[in-house]
Length: 370
Image (cartoon, rainbow, N blue to C red; front, side, top):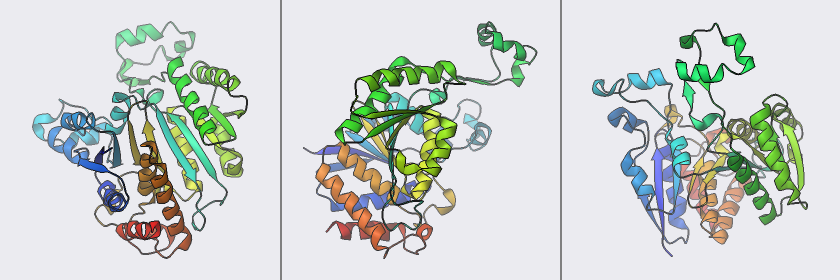
């Protein structure tokens, strides 16, 4: 079978790490065609659309995608960089969030594993997988400013809105945290399925039901139902604030963590720092029929084109993508080579105390695959 894989470098260091990924992809025995697509800040500035329709149509013809990084700026700053004829007629949106919703990539899976020999590890015994719900919650994009009269009237029936009664609509902003039972159920189910397939011992659901009672309560309720169907896997619950403390104190006690969109974004960055930082943090946006794999770092414009950043997160994203395609032996080969490269320490980028380039790191991984 020949795979069709979309390559979306984005901008900033996204192009640097994508070049590193291509070095590894060219070296593995994977029957694939790589199709590059337009996505990023330059297309926002030129076309008023950071995710052109032609790219979306291209993705529909592929098996999965590999994504680099993308620049994102606040609404007012984004408007200033548009050509005059587009200013005020379009609003910036996050391309990766739109892709997650468009292709229903509801599971954001973020492994945080410490590789032996990494001088940036907090501990060497950390191996956590975070399952973050990827299409709902505060990232749903349902926001209001100023608050329309219809929205205001609809929520003023709630008794706790009385304290905001005198606040003018143009001095109030509302973001909706939307949960559905379906969304809660399937992300927790995905976490337990992974635990069973990869023989993981525990699943911890992380929320804040003592304060955010309805939405977090829904997630906890669905998690408890699924836990009863998986009695061989230990089930734990934790409040998100306490979880942040416990991850720093005893990260080796956690195996799989499952949580909602914003909490998952925060907790996974914390966990990434425990294993070396965002240079080692990778993820898969996974649905039932499609997936997009990406390092979780940003575009770091000041380093763009210098090829000095750590490509490990991108190379592990490649490993995760290949594994999702069913090529598990190739995926294992890539991860073993990454682990050997880190352990040997002969080739290291600046963040690990070395002076090797992004591409030299990828080339060393290829040598270690042999």
